[in-house]
Length: 443
Image 1 (cartoon, rainbow, N blue to C red):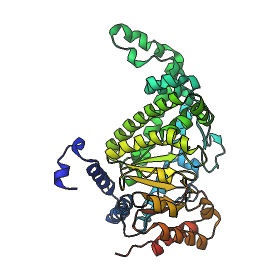
Image 2 (image 1 turned 135 degrees about the vertical axis):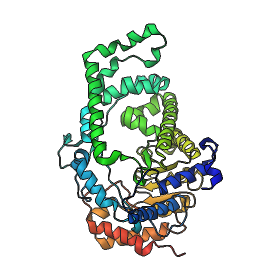
Image 3 (image 1 turned 45 degrees about the horizontal axis):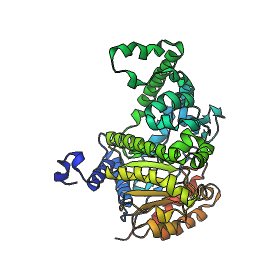
Image 4 (image 1 turned 120 degrees about the horizontal axis):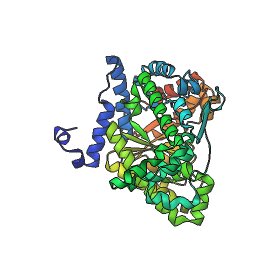
């Protein structure tokens, strides 16, 4: 980036200049000390490759995003969630491998003890509702917002989250239903009455649980180094507003009914949730100097809703979020779970290099034809093939994908799912070898 751009205030930069700065942060993470010159070169080689493909340019070779899975990486999901020392050992082993060969690998770990202390209701996981040897965690569908509570959500989403949603989603925080709105405190005569609920033993117990959560997180971060900085965490998890309401609040049945019974209130709520998502995402990625917002798209797939419903309820609020992030130079990475074959013609509305797509079951050749001149695309190596196929079958499938999608750049060789547990290592190697053999660009 030029000296002239660097001298400008952030608010004065154009969206493209902001994106260029985020790319530079990704390439040279602020505050990160690499263990060796070799590790730094490997990281920057892979980071530059990813920057090129995200901007729909030809890199030196097709990057590979390996779906390592917990067990394929040599560590169970239980260990990932309860044994941070082993997490760091694994991260150390993986961190020195593959950068120069185009691989993108990482270790995802959520402290299980924190979830237990909070009595989190939305999931079960190994050692908590599932056997310790279970390969992953499971979502627990529920109605955590009632059909008649839209007005409360629309009026004050933060207050609704604090005093209604969180007490239902976190058993330890159930006493927060007794708290008063913080906006009531405007004069001295209201101070004492506002804090009266804190005299309740159950409210104090909830606060003590939060202190324990903080202590456990402090222990975890001391072991893992805090989890900040570097390309592996240069992104933030986000959700489409429809998925926030449909997954997190109303549940699948609830939001389907709402589309028919109270569509106007649902649309108002989607707009409110979009605004909250925009503000939180921008604030967090600016603070972390991050590049990417990662959206797993749960309920927008072919067959889940009609085209009319998609264009009415799903896409407009999601597009509003993406447009705002693009203005801040943030790359929107959309994981299209299921098939998006009927959606492709309607979602190519963004500037070149502003959006990246990870496809699960979508026709990749068609996605390349429709989106490939403006969007980075990746995915569609079947999890079943990686789990049960032969190395020769994996390599052949990857070869065909590369031939269809790599010309012109903007393609990442990836699986159509986030991870594949128990995939034979030789199949993962075959995926990497395919990129090295068939995905090298001739300059």
